[in-house]
Amino acid sequence: MEKMRLDKYLANGGAGSRTDVKNAVRKGRVTVNGETIRQPERKIMIPGDIVCLDQKPILYETYEYHLLYKPAGCVSATRDEVHKTVLDYVSSDRRSELFPVGRLDKDTEGLLLITNDGELAHRLLSPAHHVDKTYYARIKGHVTEEDIVRFQEGMDIGEEKPTLPARLTILSEGDISEIEVTIQEGKFHQVKRMFQAVGKEVLYLKRLSMGSLTLDPSMKPGDCRRLTEDELRNL
Image (cartoon, rainbow, N blue to C red):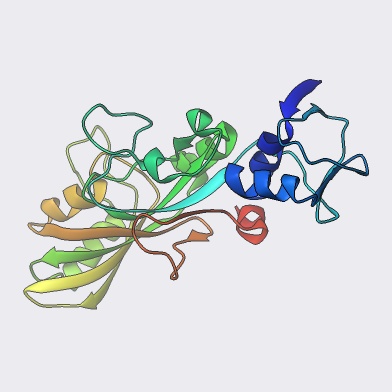
């Protein structure tokens, strides 16, 4: 069994920020084993004590799952002495435990899952599990049907093995083409290197989805929120 402050327990249980839950406790909205508690620093036992907010039980979360719309300019790392990291956008009392699932290049935007669940991270990242990762990109140059075939066949990007087959869809074609591409790996700069292999350059890249998890259209770069129950169940 473990002792924990009531406000920390509530925040870890997804009941709100530490400030939000402290206010809720002081207003008498929180009970422990049926008793109204107004002291945020009150220690509770895990497991054992039953904590409710507005009469709704709050369960302690062993793992946290955050959906980040990664902005360009930050690095996919837990710490960096020079650049802002993706964890700087996450609001959590357990931030020291969290890490990004995979990485996006510094100048790449889009969906990034932040968690402390190593088993889930392994399942999502392992090529053996064939988890789709879909990107939108703007490409310098005319993307052609021949490129679609090359991507589908797999290609040499300077690794020991060629890439796995990838699905390339042309959204618009011209001097600057717009595409979507789905891969099942996460090699270093993979999408950029694949287009370099067909003589083209990625000008802008954004990850739209990873497995069943998709970028929330209501979010803007830098926004971060907890996964919903449906999103977590689907993962």
